[in-house]
Each structure stands twice: as structure tokens, then as C-alpha cells.
Length: 143
Length: 412
Ligand SMILES: Cc1ncc(COP(=O)(O)O)c(C=O)c1O
Image (cartoon, rainbow over all chains, first blue to last red; front, side):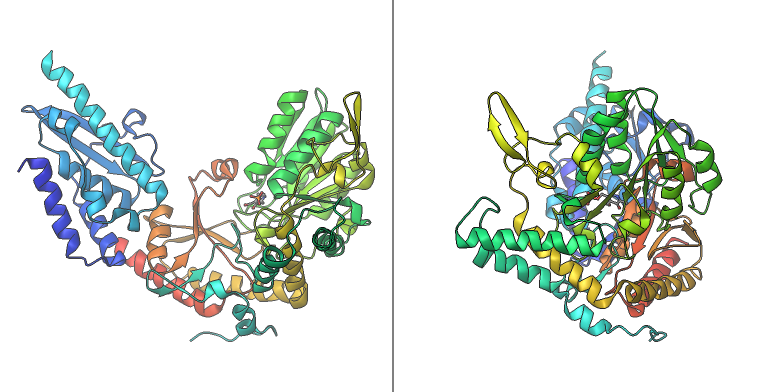
């Protein structure tokens, strides 16, 4: 199984243990967010803000040994947890794999139940941004 | 569980008239504290809607058949009801719109196009809802008029001295809200109007937030225009009112063209109907307008004084309990306030608070509440806003505060 799929399966399994309890689920999401690797202060700039999110989300990507390293942060704890799920899913894969990745865990864990329409749109914007970064990195790799 | 209520209204009975309140959200009893955005609909209103759609539905005016007659009577009965509810001099001064937003836009477009010209000044306050800002910006763009902002203090109160300084013979219009939706401030509109009149300025009062809480008397206020929305008054969505002084309404051009608003149409020219019909082009929200009458009945049966006394009690009770929560910062602390509490809690973003409260079955609003210029002035992105209606209880406030306390503890 490829890494991206494997990570998603892990997430699906973890969330299944929460048994659909909203309070525990949000709590878990925030916990994951709190564990997210810190984003350096100098990365917290306007250019790194994901457009289309209601909360502020900063996202950066760089290549490390031909693998993408995403870093992210948010001013809200729940959104930070949500972006951490994506960072975890897509980190350390080849840029081309990120570009091609099918992100299916949100449906599987029933994410639309615990994030509203606003945040769903924001979440889609994050995925799009991560793929754009990865695409830019593939170009960099080729050159 | 909590202190008893000293007002004499029967909350259990009132709650029973709102079936929507009797439900669980996320496995917890619903606590609805988002009344400033839209209040729940009283059962008599829902019944009237059902009656209309099941028994009486027909287009109004012009019809000679029985159902058309019934619908027309119901529709005009609501106009009569609004006329009494806000004490307008005449029933014809009541125009139905789809809400406060449309009422203000109507004035900005129709009155604005006739009476505003280059260099004229429009005064609005720092507290305004976007719907009492943007229509004036558009009017200003079209006419060359200038918008000036009446400043407020840190408590969220209009600075009357600054207002007086801004007023001049150039002031053509003063447009302010009666009650601020974001902070709950009750503005001294009577005094504001009096001062505007001394400069021969026209006055527009946005009473969207006032109507469910405060007794409105347009003759006593002496305003030229006043707008309100049914859905904030236990009534249906899609119905609003514009009150306008007869002479002004008569002198204004139509807002939209179409059926209903005309007397005669020919390709050589069209003559317009009299007010209020001149401003009611097309088929309105008939059933909703008819049902709106019952919302006003509901409010007046309890009585504005009783409602205000009870809501003030809720407000004070909540203020005391909330102030004990670590990191609680109220936003907007005006002396004279409606039952709205905007706040922030250190370290916790309003969106997180809103969502974590929702999980506990508690509905509050988070964000800028359509008052971005106000948020800019306060140097914040937004707040959490709890707003109480007559069906809310101290027990609900207890649960709300306990839930907040738990959330805050989690973040510390
Ligand atoms: C003070 C104020 N003005 C205007 C409006 C707009 O009302 P509506 O959306 O019903 O047109 C609102 C609604 O939130 C409000 O609170």
C-alpha cells in the first residue's frame, strides 16, 4: 500500500474508535492539532495563508530528500487539527504522489458531520493548496 | 438550579408555543442563543402559514374570487397590525419588503436618487450593520454624496458630542440603528433624530434588532424612515417593513417596476399606483406577510415592558455568571443594552468556541456579525455572541456557562 493510502487508513481506524461521539472527535482533532510540528514565525506571512478558509491557515511546503515536507498552523484549534490530518497524510511522499493523491478519509470518517459547510470549503481549499505546492515542487525537481 | 425569575410572565407556556425548542441537538437539549440573527417562529405563525397554504392561497388584490379576497384581507390586516404596532400616523405609510436590508435599499435607491446630490453628507454610525452601510455607499457613488461616520466609545456607545459636531447644513441623511446587533447597545435614537431634524436632515432608523425588544413608536420618535424584519420578531422569514412618512414616500420615485405598483400602463407612459402599492411591485410573500400578524400579536400579548424586563433579567444574570469565567472579556458594555452579549475568551478563538458549544447543543453566533467596520474599530476579527429571546431561561444560561467553563478549562 502506498504511504498516502496507509496514512489515511490509520486515520480512519483511529476515528472509528471514537464511535461517532462528536465531543470526543473534536477533542481528538484538537489534540492532533496541538501536536503538529511548529511553524516558524517567519512563515506566518500573508503569502502563506490559504485562501478560502474562514479561520487563518498558514501552509508551507519544501523538498527534503525529494519528499514533500508540509508545515502548517492555524489561529483556531479545530482547524489546526484538521490541517494536521492533511499534513500527516501527505507528508514525506513524492511531490508527484501528492499531486495525484486521492484524499478519501474525510468521507470515511464522516467529517461533514462535525465540520460545517464553511469549514468543508476551507478544507477543500487546503487540499487544493497542498497539491499546488506539490505541483510547483515537481517542476523544481525537474529543473 | 438557579435563581428564580421575578417577572410575571409564564415561561413554560411561552416555550410551549415554540415546538422547535423541544429537541435535542448532538444529543443535548437545544439551547438557542442566536436570536439576534433570527428568532424562532411562534406556533401561531406556523399555523397561519399552514392555513394559508392549505386553505386560502391566492394572489392578492385585483382578484374577485373568494380565495383572492381572503388572501387580500389577510395581507391588508397585517398592514393594519404593523401600523398599530409601530404607531404610524397612517396605514398607507407601511410598505412590505423582504426584510430590513431591502427596506434600506429601497430608501437608498429611491429617496437617494431624488434627494442626494454631490457634496451632500450622509451620517451613519460606527455601529452599523453592513445593510445600513453598503446601500449608502452605493448611493454615494451614484450621486457624489459623502459618507461620514459617527464615532463611538470603547463601550460601544455613540459619541453624541461628536455627532453634534458632524451635523451641519450639508447633512442630508442620518441613518443609524436603534439597537446594535453586534453589541446590543440601545442608541438614543429620539435624541439623534431631534438633532438631525434641527438641520433639516432626513432620518432612517434600522430597527431590525429593536423591534423584538423595544416598543417602537414612529410618531414619538419622529423619524422619517424605519425598517424592521419579521424573522427577528418570532415571525416568518422573507418579510420586512419599511415605514416612511407619507409626504416623503409620495415624492419618491418607484423602486422597482412591475405589476401591482401601477395604475395604468401603456407604451406611451405609465402612471404609478398610490402608496404603499407604488413600492410593492410584483407578488409579495403573501402567506408570510399574513402570518407575520400573529408574531406581533404574540409580542403584544406578552407586552414589550414584560419582555424587556425579563430579557434584562436574563442579561444581568448571564453577565454575572460569565464574568466568573477565566479570561472572559465582554465586548460592548453600554449602559443601555438589549439582551445581547458579545464576548471573547482569552486563548480561545471564537470559531472554536462556537463549534464546541454546538456540540453541547448550544447555538451562538461567531464572527463579525456583518459589522466589519465595528470590528475594525474594536481591533478584533469577531466575537462570540449570545443573544436572548423571551423563551430563554436562566437554566439555559447555567448550562451555557458550565459548558463554557469546561471548554475554557480544556484550553488552559
Ligand atoms: C441591525 C441590523 N440591521 C439590519 C439587518 C438585516 O436584516 P435582514 O437580513 O433581515 O434584512 C440585521 C440582521 O442581522 C441587523 O441585525
